[in-house]
Length: 583
Image 1: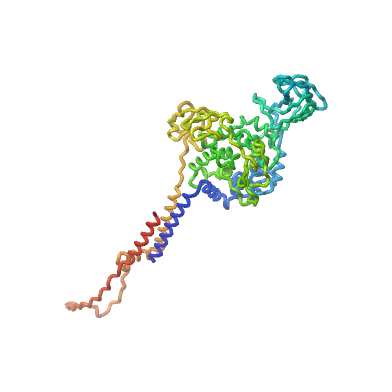
Image 2: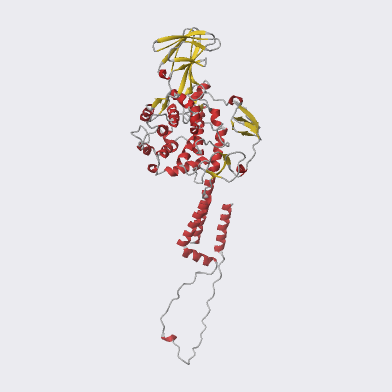
């Protein structure tokens, strides 16, 4: 019996050692995937719509439950359809090859014209030339002068603005403008927010030779479920519809013009996917070379910011964020126990192909091609390759690589390895080395460490949700924000407690046999019985007064020879094996 007890003990010990080793060897992403799988399995019906869609997006699970939250498979949630939630649901369901045509149609029908943008018609020529512009059946003459200025009468819909452009009246935004010049020329549309002086040029530029004609028409929309535009919803809708192959160019001017007022949504991330621009601006917004936190949620915002870089594993900023996430990962594998944020971080930084989305189509990057946005592929004069898989989100497969920009191309400056980028951020560049890094939107210098930073705090204007106000001082202005103290249960402690409970349970179940074993081990034979047998009295055992019975000494039985302590030797062998296992 003692061998069985020892075998159980050895089994539990070895099991705990292997369990601890497996926990230690798990990667950050493996722990996180295991965590959200545990939260999702058999609980889909109890999750929120947002948690369901991110479960579908990352794991391919909860599809039925997500569809049940829709209004006739058209929009989400059915209690009050929203642009953002519907767009995210389309992204999730399309990833597992589910039909989303109804939802796409609903989304495309929710567009409206954004009125708070000023539009301009630009006409350029290398030489002075005479031109005409026609709209509403009438033609008007004007001239392009040597200094590129414009002059002439252009009707009620157009007026010369700042000498170089023709401002379009808001009442004529729905009209078509045909331009013709006597010499070769270019035409394009410019736009700006009414309250801003910054002009943006649309992606589309048309050209024609002398006496040729170009046509320009304003196409500017946003997405909305009410009387006003939904900026965050438009960001997600354009991103998702772009990934579905739809033309979303009419929505880009609104997103660009209103970006400054909506910085908390990190619009640069979506605009980089849509236009191929804003990459440097996006990467420069990384804080402490670890995270993004424009809305106040470091985990969600970091997932948003790195969404365009799902296939760029060598990106320095992405690696920095992954290292930071490893440092702050919870004991359960999730981040702050939040299913949505953990799933989104995995989809953005460690994406995997779900079982439902698996195909036999060759992988793009494994076939020596490159995953990037279609806009970036156009910028490098590449060709979009349609018969390849492995590109996530809005990325497509391109036959040319996207070269990394130099530091000067990103309007940056080099700092030595011992300097900080004060007021800005270090970004990846083609000419960075181990001894010099590219600083964008900042200055090189030696950063002094404040009392707040010495105590693991950050000086800022307000604290995030996972931070609390610290009592340490900041050098100039702001308050000291320190991480909130969270109590995390150590996995090893749990394992030890479980092992001890198991041993106690074994001891209770086999207590009598264990007691017998220890008595034998100590050389005492079987333990004494707790009760002595009783015999009925007999007449021969009765003693009368005055009579002294004669004592009869019985023959002493021969004591058996002591057996060698084989049990102890076996026990020593077991202990020796346990020591070897523990090495």
